[in-house]
Length: 362
Image (cartoon, rainbow, N blue to C red; front, side, top):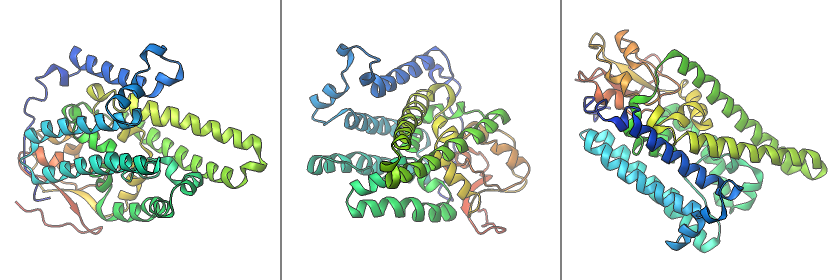
């Protein structure tokens, strides 16, 4: 993108809370504690006197803990956006991307569900799609919602998502729309340089993220079978119910929340997106077949390493730049930071047909 600017590493390694020192561990502990409280206070993990989430929500005029969480989520993203734009707002690409993140979160992931719940006693998060929001393709869910929402769930997941991933790459969702990505872009930005770019972490990522994708697809099929034939198969119905509960506990709560956000200050802001998100895995596989790539200007790289340091997905961008190799990686979320921090403008995000490259200007 020609709208990307350049900016260096600034104070990345000079602040203890951003360098895995004691203050970073404290922040991680507080985040992990919050998510454990949010997800497990009603599971007998906490005494009755500490079950405060729902009362706190109602005290501020919200219906339950999840609307309180959504409100706090918006505040964290706004504060993170201010921090991010003060450092990297000289790029118009960054300005637009972060503005879209905030609009999607505040309107589609908080205000719309809140208003729907007030008038219909049910909510819907339009910014989340299957398989990230795995229940949005369960027949039970589609039957529960009005027809227009059911149609949206199916078409958005099975038609719009692959088309957009083929033409624009996974960035349209992971860096612009998704609430998980939005929090990583804003609140998580101070720790992006902590993401490991080692071969070992890459191998781990490939196994775990595709394993969760297989689990999500398999569970969706099992739930669909249960919906149509479960009444005549009581044992099968019981097993599928347990599998749904376990998936929600381990993937939805522990991996996405406790681990995915709680470990921001220690391992970077994309722990969930990189290693466990089934949506990221599916979009990454599609992206490899599409038009998106990081274009490299030949013979310009000075091997400063800024691009690799600032890649929140742990991609060794410098290695590609040193080889004059434009590339498409399944993990890349198209945040554009590699191009933004490059002092020589070597890198550029582009969408071009396979075998062709758009001219790299400047």
